[in-house]
Image 1 (cartoon, one colour):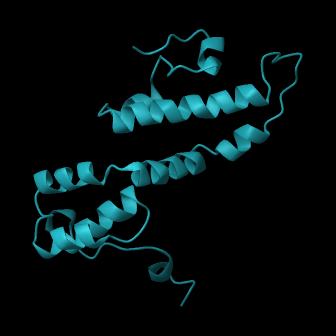
Image 2: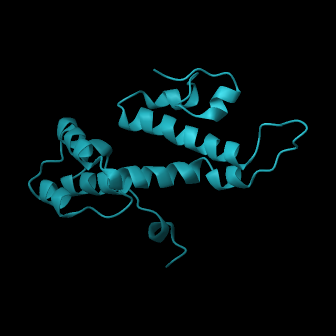
Length: 148
């Protein structure tokens, strides 16, 4: 039935340490590409080459393509509600620098930081505590330095 949680969500049938290669292929694909596994991932799964942490990490690195970046950008936009930022109106008396260009710079700055952390091999937890910006004017308006 369409209202059933089993229809709406994918439930794990096994403990993470005991996932099959096919389950690991699906997790990688849905997480990184937002779609079903391709032939390459299914081939790895069929050869049982998605069982160890090292195998999964190597496959994840090979999956880090523009397709994955697009899926992550979509996730970030929904998570951070960029649609709201772009529609935000501020009182010019209190926020004289805020305009549509500033709203666009805010979302771009967030995307750049996200890309720097996720695709640059950094600690993602810095997303919540970074005290620097990635070459955008909204952070500079708040006096934050640019990252090296």
